[in-house]
Image (cartoon, rainbow, N blue to C red; front, side):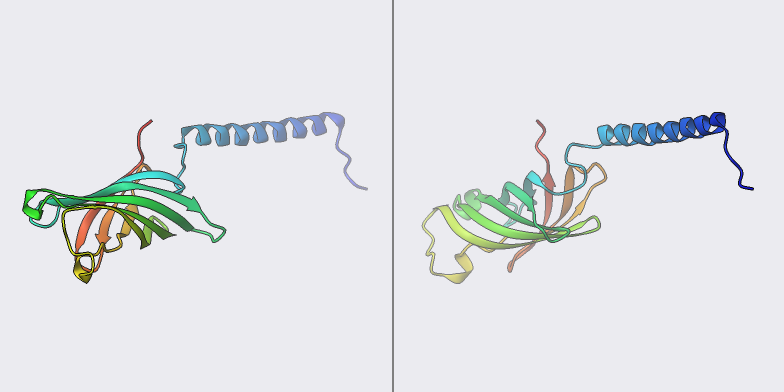
Length: 170
């Protein structure tokens, strides 16, 4: 003969299952409320800057936007960067529009960039000389524990610099 549960035992089991579900749901809500708005993904806007270069007279900075793609851990991105130099480098100013692809592996993010267009350039430099054209800003970064900052390196054909990305506080 099969064992038949009493009504009281069924009610007790139903109550315990309900308590477990409530506890799981409560933990999920608490954890999602504690997580930052962007969780740990890249999607959205970031600011960035490099370390100084060219006799400590120039720096590159900008704003980049990452958009998720259908490919897991792959993002498309667009940004404008500015290279600003002081008197040692003839007050050179270059503003550039760039597009990129970002690939994430764990906490590491690799950004490969293409220069779309030089939007503005100040000082009289011959734009036909190859070394004086703007070189794409590529990055290898590490997501930090706070998920609001990435640090790593900027690389182009001429130099390697330190780089820092951060979310703008609202």
